Amino acid sequence: MRFVIIGAGRVGLRTARVLRDEDHEVTMVERDEPTRRRAREQGFTVVDGDGSREDVLEAAGIADADALGALTGDLNVNFTACMIGNHHGCRTVMRIDEAYREGIYRKYADQVDEVIYPERLGAIGAKNALLGGTIRAIADVAPHLQVVELTLTADAPVNGYTISELHLPADATVLAFGKGDGPLEIPTEDLSLEADDRLVVLADFDVLSEVRQLLVGETAERATANAGTGTSSAATELLEGDTDGGDN
Image (cartoon, rainbow, N blue to C red; front, top):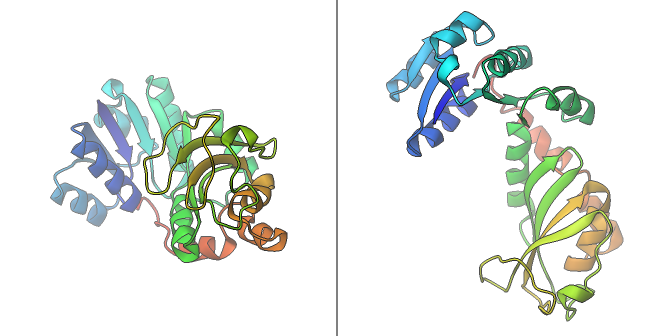
């Protein structure tokens, strides 16, 4: 497949490397000379210019591209590039770096194929590393939904239940089950839950604390504090200082 990546900074360059490693063709667009030079030194074709201009995107081959990734630190550039990509029939992916508010997400989500928020993904990883233990956030799938992997403890109220007997809150569902260190699989109803088993759960942020109480055995107060609204504010603040500037 052929991809056009707007922004050769940290996010764009890492994305381009992953695509190239999977034998896809990648052309990058970057207006900052040192950043452009760095990408070229890594073997990428880089077009000099503003990714929000149609003539620049045409020079990058947008007419023949399968998808466009607008991955700069400039929301306006990213959105304009995606609109041009839509005009040329590309799949469009837009990066946002502003505070992760549902209003911002909804404003753009309907006009592009995918909205990504790299700093939030990074904060999820930071939260996992900081907390350790029995709970691991995997991904945010919407502003109010998160996929988490939880390891059952001996204190979990559902210890000894079968999957069919497990009743999670209405806005939560089990996606996968792993026995101890075994592989994750689609759960069957007669599987028995024991300490050290792993459950992958999709849950609304509003019910994460209840899920934690059931599967990990946390107290209501601790579960509420740990669930928060997804990524902890402390982890987010750590990552906000590590954002890209301009097209980086």
